[in-house]
Image (cartoon, rainbow, N blue to C red; front, side, top):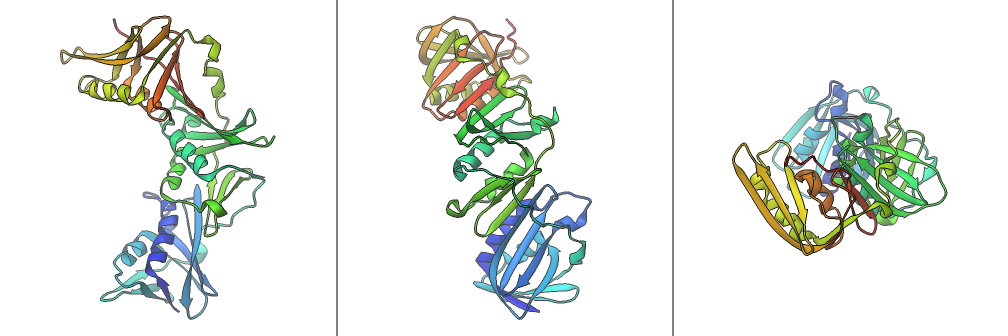
Length: 364
C-alpha cells in the first residue's frame, strides 16, 4: 500500500516522538516506531516503557495499514528529501521510500511484537500554565542527580500550601518553585529526571494543552500529541524541613546578580583545577570578598563584589558549581543571600523560587 505525506509535517511529527526512542537497549523492538494509517490519518507512536508519545499527520493513502519500522533510520532517510512531499510503499516485509533521486528500503518488524501503548484515563487534572510548568520542571531537573538516593533522581510535583509546587534536591542544593494556586487536591508526582528532557525538545500548543495524572503516570496532551510518563513509585523527602524559616536568618548580603556570577566565573582559573571547587565569601558593610586558593598549584585569587551586608559577620564557603547553579535560576537582578551561620545552608529567592545551597567546610 502506498501513501504520500508532507515532508516537513512528517519530520516535525517524528521529532515529537523521537525522544522516546532509547539510545541503548537490549529490547531491540524499542528502536522502532509503530505507524497506523486509517482514513487518511497517520498515527505514529514510540515508547521506551518509561515515556510514551503518540502524534499524527494527514496523509494521502490507498487504504489502511499498520507497520513497525526503525524510527531513527526512517527519520534520517526522510531528512534527505528535497521535495515538499515524499512517497512510501508498505509491503509485507519492507517499506520502500521513494525520494527525488533515490530509493530506500527498510525491513519491517511484526506489529504484534510492539508493546501495548494504550493511554490510561486520568484521575486528576493539573490546572496550571503550561509554559510555567515546563519551565519549573526543566529548572528543577538541574537540582537532581543520578548517583545517590533513588528519590533524588526525580522532580517532585505536589500540592503544598494551596500551590502546585516543583521540588528537587541533590543533597547539596534544594529547589522549590511555587508555580500556581491549586484546588484542595492531594497529589504527589515523582517525575524521573531523564524523562524531563522530553519537554526541553518537544513543545505543546498552550491553547489546547491538557495535563493530568493517574495512579502511576503523568499525562500531557494537546491537539496533535499525547505523552505518558511513568512516575517513580517512592516517597520524596520532606524537603521543606531543611529550608530555614525567615526568622532564623542572622545575616544578609545584597548585590547585583550579574556582578557576582562574573566574579565567581573569573575565579574558576583558580578553583577549576581543584576537586572540591571551594570559594570563600567574606563580608564588609559595602562589599563581599570572594576568594579561592589552590595550594597544589600555589595559585590564589580574590574578587571584590560591591553590595550591602547587614547582620552577623562571618566567613562562609561553597562549592562554586552548586553556588552558581542556585544563583542563575533566581529571577531578579538584585540578589539577596540569606545566612544563619557558616555551617548552615543559605537561601536565595525570588517571587516564586526558593533555592537552598549547603556550605562547604573552609580550611583556614
